[in-house]
Length: 362
Ligand SMILES: [Mn+2]
Image (cartoon, rainbow, N blue to C red; front, top):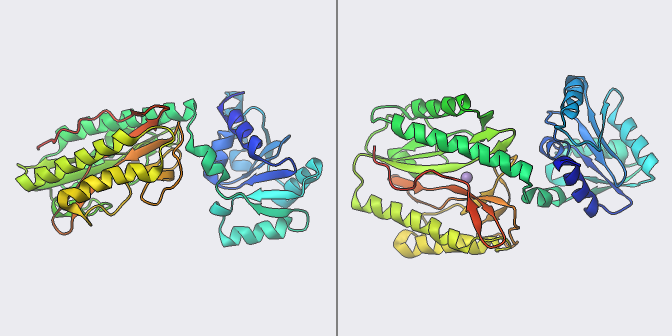
């Protein structure tokens, strides 16, 4: 049994005996099968696991399985007849009439197609967040990929902090960072790089453009992708000498991150971590200047559940990987965000980000 087989086994523990799951989402399918494709589906029941792929992926998947890169206890079939025919035959074999579907990841149109295909033979049951709950706890295979993605990201920061000069454009800096990470092993980006300077740093999700970098903060929020897994980090640098007010903002964000860290351990309630950071920022006089959550889970997707947010009532499990990214944003003026990613353990956490947080003055 490899990691993918174990994920399928964990899912089976949650599946009622008379129920099968139809996995249609690209990410969910990759999570259980180990194979990435832009189309296809999986049928998983207590006794059966089938991955159906079209001609474009069939040969590639067979090779991947021969190299041990996919689940072993899984049949790979070529989808050369309709999904309806293949899945109805599997349902009949299993004598199952309840089919779970990914209601959180199904469009209205795709749901119509599910109804057309299966409502005559099975009851369609929403899976709700069953898969997402499993994905919240990363296994060693996943953790090693996130660690490697973050290693490349840290390397990228070490490079770019020396590269940045007054007079460059934001786009120029973002491109250099992205090219460097690709050259150093990233298979792609986890998300579009944020590189915002001066007054634009007040926009948490501002985009790099032809703005020329001059005096003020410069926020870089970026991440490499490695074998499908994301990393995520933010550092705010200062171009020119920071004013006393700028240093106060920077130090407050740093202290807020420390306050969040002090609460983190496996089983902590998500909103408890958020309020540690948020209260510190508000108490320092920046109420209304921190309008996003303190952190989010990440893995195959850059934003996963659960979160460190004011609305997160659930307990964050051991094995979860989340960002810790408080910020202060003063509209029209400036902004600071500092972000690391952490792996939750029984008694605390391990910080997976290794870059310095001392203010860097360019
Ligand atoms: Mn983030």
